[in-house]
Image (cartoon, rainbow, N blue to C red; front, side, top):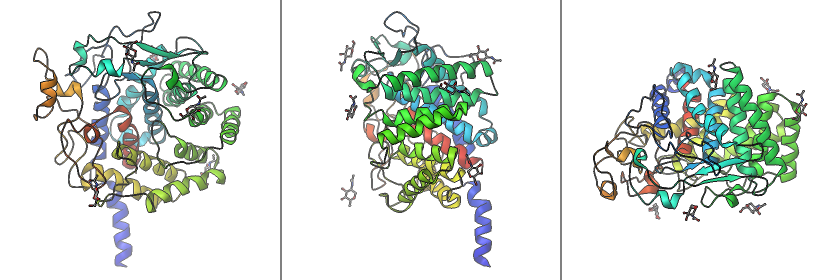
Length: 444
Ligand SMILES: *[C@@H]1O[C@H](CO)[C@@H](O)[C@H](O)[C@H]1NC(C)=O
Ligand SMILES: *[C@@H]1O[C@H](CO)[C@@H](O)[C@H](O)[C@H]1NC(C)=O
Ligand SMILES: *[C@@H]1O[C@H](CO)[C@@H](O)[C@H](O)[C@H]1NC(C)=O
Ligand SMILES: *[C@@H]1O[C@H](CO)[C@@H](O)[C@H](O)[C@H]1NC(C)=O
Ligand SMILES: *[C@@H]1O[C@H](CO)[C@@H](O)[C@H](O)[C@H]1NC(C)=O
Ligand SMILES: *[C@@H]1O[C@H](CO)[C@@H](O)[C@H](O)[C@H]1NC(C)=O
């Protein structure tokens, strides 16, 4: 009897969350505002950021302003930006109630639109897509405000001669997913997104190659196979046209997609593909793969002593949040929902304070104050910002509210030191699965 009462009260209490997920959703959206490039709108809440990179352009002078800076630097990397957009849109579609409850639905839509408005500019013709503006070597030479940037910003694109099925496939996925987000909000915009998504998928499928070969520095993809299947699945979800579902299954079979390493992130989408297939078809060939993945995460993945699944030393918090999201989506598809939600909650709660401190800037107990992030480290103009600012032990001049940092080592050890960039990096792709997982937990 006592056990039953405990279970009942735990369902009521534990699932309500010991942390204010709604507040963290709002905070995470502020992080995306802080990463905005281009001309900022009047309703921008993060006011220590102003307009920047207003001359970003393509080889023929095409306007490429807007979009997001990738991380602590000011390069606009299209591949992780598209992944970020797909994953944020997935959360808005699947867990709209979480955003509504957090009073953040408009801000969440604005966050994905900030990226898709930019992707539409980058897609300069049917078979031409810009995938990078800025150069990391040039960009990393200075520690300064983006508003003061004078560094050259070369732009790189894929086309028929230099194809990139990974970049075009992921951008197609992002535009298709966002077309669903806007379907009932702005039908014209939604249609525009879908048209570009279809064109980009056709380009990705008919001109195969790795986009990294066309950029001089980039997030190198380990292959385009997963992005092609992922793009086809999102087009099916957006159009309900069976041709795309058949295409997804045909490509899946052609590539014999299977797990190698159980991570879900900007380069690896297989677990998310399996769960999207499962949601769209209930096909046991895919639901079994989903439960294989989540059961591995729950029972076999390496953990830190305090319980974080430790998938990689780069971005361990983000990778754990992404795994949490996959299992929350599995739960939504009816697969072991209680068990998988409990796992997801344990991972997110680790990040919010269960390990003895918060790993989210500006939130909770003892949050990080030295994110490896230039624009928040720099004081407002006209104060000087340079490598002395970087090397100083002072906290960042501005609070980069909502940013999930890289995270601790395998022993839960963490140092709040800007120069330890592995532990203190932040990135637009780090926050995406995290934010969608929060929306899923908050709607319960
Ligand atoms: C729909 O989106 C487009 C593109 O951003 C915009 O120009 C238009 O004003 C929007 N329409 C409505 C009704 O919000
Ligand atoms: C990338 O291109 C820029 C401009 O064209 C150049 O300055 C830079 O050295 C290149 N970087 C690499 C790694 O090739
Ligand atoms: C794409 O990259 C992967 C990983 O580096 C490589 O194995 C594959 O051969 C490349 N494909 C093409 C078409 O270059
Ligand atoms: C489904 O998509 C395919 C490929 O784009 C297209 O040829 C076909 O006309 C579409 N079918 C419907 C019913 O819209
Ligand atoms: C999958 O199964 C669930 C539970 O039986 C059901 O609610 C859902 O509609 C099914 N989805 C599809 C695409 O068949
Ligand atoms: C974690 O602790 C183990 C056992 O003490 C040790 O062998 C390992 O080197 C530590 N890892 C790191 C990254 O310090």
